[in-house]
Length: 290
Image (cartoon, rainbow, N blue to C red; front, side, top):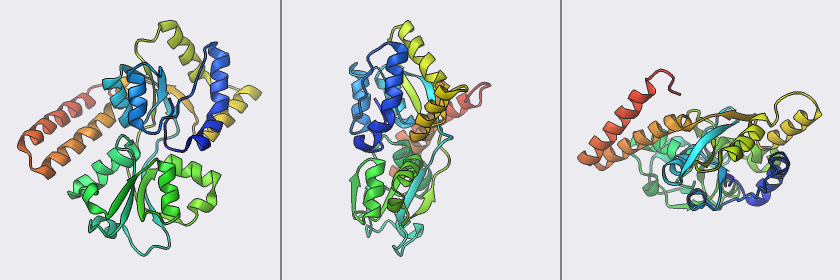
């Protein structure tokens, strides 16, 4: 399964050479599944309909916790961020959005999106005590590409989108993003992981891992061709990883829950969230923690 940040029509052609190479290298039948949202991808892995996938950090946590998945690699793209975008010809600023007066329309991301959901909740809405569900006159949930197009075409006033998707749309259709401007940028987020079902046979894991970690590495015409494929995907390659890669995102989610508990003035939830934050912060302080 592959991240559903863009339309399948835009995504599939870029992935086809990579998937063809995986079939040839592993000798396994490889089929791509582009789900309409993160929840569908998580459930597909949970019920064995998919065996591996490229997830966002937030959705990867759910896949690990609920779907028997484990992280085995990270797609290296130098990190990414959430961007709040608007049309440059609109006469309002971030302060107008944060007024939360239901005067604007919002392009909302999938709730399982790290850049479009978790990051703004932790860094933008939560610290200010704002509830984005109550701030806007209307909100429409879509993938990042659709939200970029919606802002560009005036269908919504503002959206928070993935910076990597914004970059790919800009490269593919610069006329779409030329009239857009950024009001807010989240802190840098860790790159997205690749996960597989933990119960896959060890020989199959070895074949897949060997292919992915070697793809685009080295010199010569083949390596150069592979790096060109990766560039179309917005990637520089893949690095080995494990479930510890998700620790920083787990801390981000814990802080978000604490902010939400404080906003709701719920003592029991506040205490529970504070304990979780303390536990994760202590784990992060241990030697060797990511």
